Image (cartoon, rainbow, N blue to C red; front, side, top):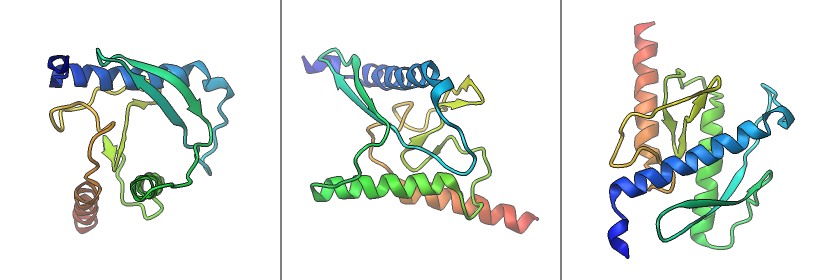
Amino acid sequence: MFSRFNPVRVDWCFTEIKNIIIRSLQSVQKSILSSKNSFELYGYDFMIDTNLKPWLIEVNGGPSMTANTDFDCRLKCGLVDDALTIVDIEGILDGSEMNVGGFDLIIDKGVKIVQEKHSMYNSHLGAANQRKKVMRHIVQKFMLRKRLE
């Protein structure tokens, strides 16, 4: 059974999850309120079958941020940290980033983004989040940009 869990199959599963997320947002895009002064998080619940096919269970418009375990607390605090990094109050990001923390850019101005290969898989979905490494890279780019100005 586990012979089907190879890198190509896992990559396909993550790609399908991203496609499902994109299609679900496109289907309701007219009813999503858009404002430059706010953002909203959506929580997607998936089931993955033995063939690594993802099945969308539900989408939560206001996912719970209550933590029941230490792991849950670290996960949700990291989510908030990444979300605030994307907001970019400090002006560190230059807009060319393909991922920030645990978030991938998957669509830009209605165009689906094909990610470069950063690792064995084409997504950070479900992967270990190397937040410090990514932030160090972003800050280094910012500092270089400031020196050149």
